[in-house]
Image (cartoon, rainbow, N blue to C red; front, side):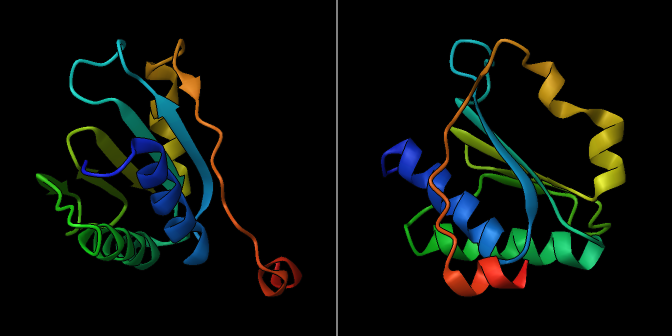
Length: 126
């Protein structure tokens, strides 16, 4: 990632939030995972929503000069993985997230405090 990784995490989280994704968590897995430094896990309501979230994330990061090295799951849309090397994003439909409990793979990981901006219009709509 070209930018500060925390800025990138916040950009991804904000993008997910703005597109009505939910249950967003970011984990710092440096020193725990051999394949990435950060993991973001989030949910979409249905398969089309999960796909739309993945497209929005890719668009937002593309504007920052970042392209995923690997994308998986866009055909089904129930679990999509976006691999940006230092950051891996997992977007699930709720049932699958509960089934796989990905966060439990990293019990010693620190949860990253995300800076998600909620506009007054968004908070009234909730």
